[in-house]
Image 1 (tube, one colour):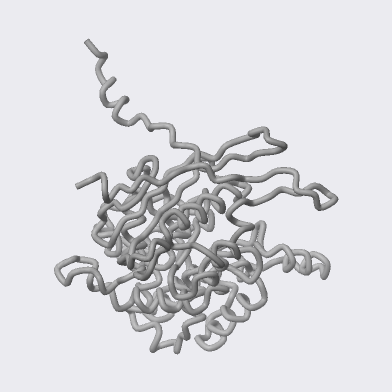
Image 2 (cartoon, helix red, strand yellow):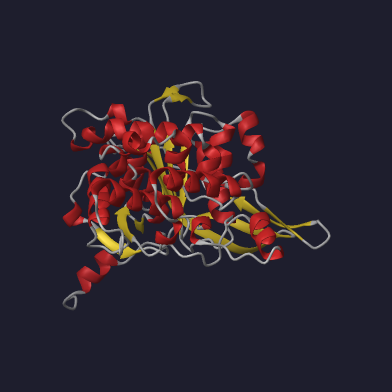
Length: 373
């Protein structure tokens, strides 16, 4: 007879994810990146996938497009005369380049906020290597406005300004700006704020955990907010989320950066067709708008969630898996796929510029819509 609790342990035991990417040097496999991928439609119906669609992941920065709706619904666009590039940067994980800093500073000057209120820190920022090198050369220390999450933190500060809330401690779970933000996030995911599983993100604010299939479903909603039925609890967010989606589509360099940011590069390679948003620890959400796929068929909107098991500190696993998954889904093909070649099979070079190793995607998505009825 099984020991007490053994069935519960078996139920909670995770399956080892499949290999998605192999790091190869001179024909020798040096390491692998395992992970899980799921694509669903707006209703949550599984379309394609590999691994465990119920793998739970912290949203981290993948939450940003949804939380921004809290500011829009509060009348922030009208009150602060916010433009699409400014909205895009508040849904971003930007590189901390001058164009990002100028955009955020422009909001603060117009609204009457001080940058000293930003509490996101500045450690290891900016992400953009050329900007970081210039600051170091000039003896400048990066300020919090160059942090990749300063746009998101600006949402909380603008909510405080709009609602008359004290901005001190805006990053704390119980602050009304956080309550407003997570209530909106919960609505986008079809749940309630009380049911959210909270953690602390790297920039100090709360983050929320969901199964990958639910993350993919939320990104399918972002791809086509109008596709949700009026009886669906998420429908009330459709207008605000459409504004966020369109702002991100129109300003891909605000979503990431002008140099070597995969989210920006993917969105520029197929303009108007996809919103790509990465989060730390190798999570990525992809909102794929309705349109033709490589096989000639026209597909409805869908969402995809990709999670690399090891956190992928080198980025190569996330890059290769993302481009390969989009290729297999028929979203990327031809010239767009060639343009993204450096992400599809990322290479490592030696000090002399010679290619010494390559990350090679090694998986095949299962057509779950055909297998599951």
